[in-house]
Every structure is written in structure tokens, then in C-alpha cells.
Image (cartoon, rainbow, N blue to C red; front, side):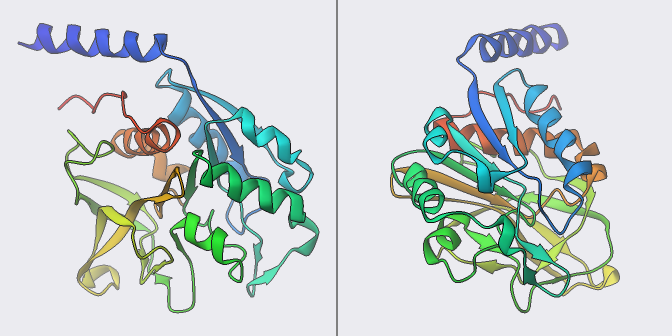
Length: 254
């Protein structure tokens, strides 16, 4: 039985590797979190599957808007926050970039935000909707700790075949959901012992924006958060689904 499972997993990985790569643009370079620490873990989580081709921009304010069409999915580990929630206006996007960004997703492209990667442009309704969820007034978190991540929609392509798991991370509470049609596919248990409310808090959400697929996860605060193989697979599947509408990356072996 173990040999059969090994062969099946090997064949699945070969098929994934032979498929056309999912083209990802990782948008980073400015964040109130340590993006320089987290970015290599994001890239590793994707590239270790053999499914993705990742390009990185650390200067999205200078990125040619027309080039967005070269990708299948935009992945944001970028925001305009600094201490006190003031903005960095010098890193803001031009009207042309804003229009191209929205149209990319609206016309069928994928979009994923990780952790604080959606915490920008609160007055820009379209950006907030396609980002699905964000840090906002009332959102908070306790100390970093290990907690359970629950699969809330086991029938969804991203979570199908995945099991609940425990991981270390920063658990956001009362996160502001900006898309009323979004589906919560994973939640985290916020225990009272860790300073939480003793309830399940949404952590991974998916939705549709125009013809495009959008996704958000509050997980992934720091490099250590990616020590969890279960999380890396969940995250890679999320990006693959946003970019293609399908998931071919296998679930971790039990």
C-alpha cells in the first residue's frame, strides 16, 4: 500500500512538472512587515512544487502596466503602511497602473494577497473588493503562537484532500472582510489562553472578481510561519487555483 501511494505521488508530481508553469508576479518591496525575510519563503513554497514561474518586482510603482498581461496571477506581499498607518505616497501607483491592475483581474487574471498584502488603498473600492480582506480598525492579534487551522470548505479545490493542521503564526482577529460574497475556506481557533475570543476566526478566503479568481490568507506573518509543510501546500494550491481555476498540487502525504 505504501509503495502504491509513493508511486501515485511520484506520477502526480511528474504531471505537475510537465504542465505549463503558472506565471506569478510577486509584488513586494514595501510592507510594514519584514518582506525581505518572507519573500524567499513565498518563492520556495511555490517553486518547490515545480508548478510555478515566479518574477519579482520590488518597485511596483515603476512596473510597466502593460506587462501585467504576461502573468496568470498577481501575488501581493506589498502595502503602503508604515507605523501610525500613514501612507508612503512615493510608492503609490499611477492612474494607468491602477486601471491595468483592476482590469487584469476583472478580465480573468488571478489575484492573491498574503497577510498584510492587502492593507493599502482603503478608499479605493475596487482594490479593496478584489483583495477580499484587510487589516482595519478593530482588527487585532495576540502574541505569536501555535494554533489549529481548520478546513472549512473541504469540497473546494484548494482544500480538497487537506487535513486540519497546527502551525505557528500571527493570528489576526476581527479581520475586515471587504467582499461580502467571499467564501471562508480555512479558519484559525483563537483560544482564550492566547488572549483571543475563544472562537474560530476566518483566515483563508476565496472569491470571484469579474472573470478573475481572487484569494486572501492572513497566515504567513514571518519566515517561521512557512516551516509548516501543510501551510506551504495550502498556500501554493491557493495561488495555483487563483491563476488557473484548477488545483493539481497534491495534498501532503498522511
